[in-house]
Structures are given as structure tokens and as C-alpha cells.
Image 1: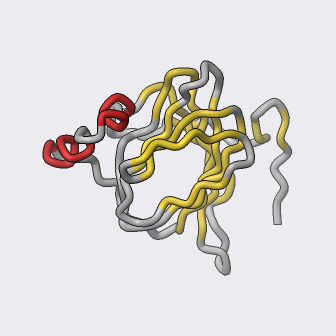
Image 2: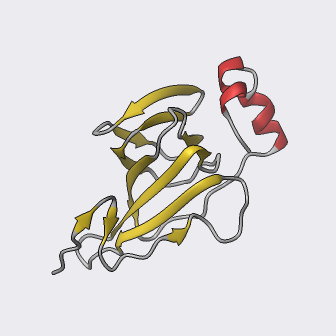
Image 3: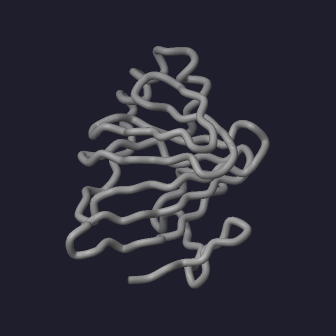
Length: 145
């Protein structure tokens, strides 16, 4: 059992980590691991925070995500559509779905993300994938890669 106390968008004894170590296809985003998973609940709970005008990586996976918007508002690309999201919204990201989060409203944008402990690595778009996504002008304007 454990409790991590929360105050001013920080959890006690929870370090702020780099979003990703090996990539540079993102801007102004951090990560915190709130729970590494339990034996009978093999899910990792993470908190991501994006500074104004920042964004996550454009990617997809073989696993699904469950995301709860925790702070502020922004936008998310899901597949080939862009959705505005705000605090308390729940976003489900099916496997093999392109997704990218952006802090587009001029304030900090934070979200909780629940994923299976055993999961695949993210896949970045190929040139062909980018060309397909860019066929939608709204998506072409939104994506960062």
C-alpha cells in the first residue's frame, strides 16, 4: 500500500522525468510515474505535462491507452481527427491509432495515462504515413513530427 500526496501539480517522492530519452520528436513535455503496477493490477499509471505550445510524439502502438485530462485543456489527434479536450475528459486510444497531444490553449496541459506494464515500443510515422495523414488539411496543420 502507498499514498502519494498531491499539491500544486506535484506528487511527493515522485521525480519529474524526461518524456523520452532517445527521441527528439516532441516539445516541452515531462513524465512522472505514479504507479509501476501491482502484481494483480499490471498497469502503469503515468502523468504527462505539456507546457504551452508543446506537444507529445506523433506515434501509435500495438497496445491501447486510457487517458484522463487532469489539468488545463488542449487538443488530441486520434487517427485522422482532432478533438478539443479539457479537464476530466476521458480519452481512449485504441491499438494502432495515430495519436498526438498538444497544449494549444496557452496554458499547461496535463494528463494521466494508464497502460499495461508489458507493452510494445511506440512506432513513429514513415514518410508514407505522414503523406497519408497530410491528406486531411486540418491534420496536416496540427501534427508535429
